[in-house]
Image 1 (cartoon, rainbow, N blue to C red):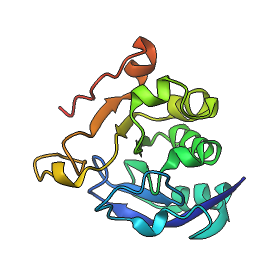
Image 2 (image 1 turned 30 degrees about the vertical axis):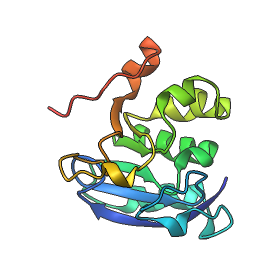
Image 3 (image 1 turned 45 degrees about the horizontal axis):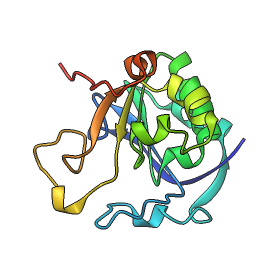
Length: 168
């Protein structure tokens, strides 16, 4: 399946726990003021590649604890993100995903059903909510602003309400 990406980092320690492969997906409707990746906003920007190529890159990268889907907004390309996340889970990697949407918006049906039916079941932790520059906080681990939440996706899907992820 085709996917548009802005790029990737094979080894990083800042987008979730452990050593992570971070995929910066292209396309974001949120346009948050102060965004650290505004070059990812344009859905026609970046480069087109194939999900199988991304999966191959992840599988060839040694010493990974997990992958992180970032952007842009991965929920903008949910089918492609789901394929990559599923492959990572099959390989025993954790999957984190950043989105500007809140879980409440997702549950309200704002996005295509593939988000909740295909992508989210493959995600361990969802960092939800837009970046709000006035709420920038150095105290927020793995987040930019204090309105964003780390959600335990399995429990959130099971209960139907946002359940915070316990970092301990």
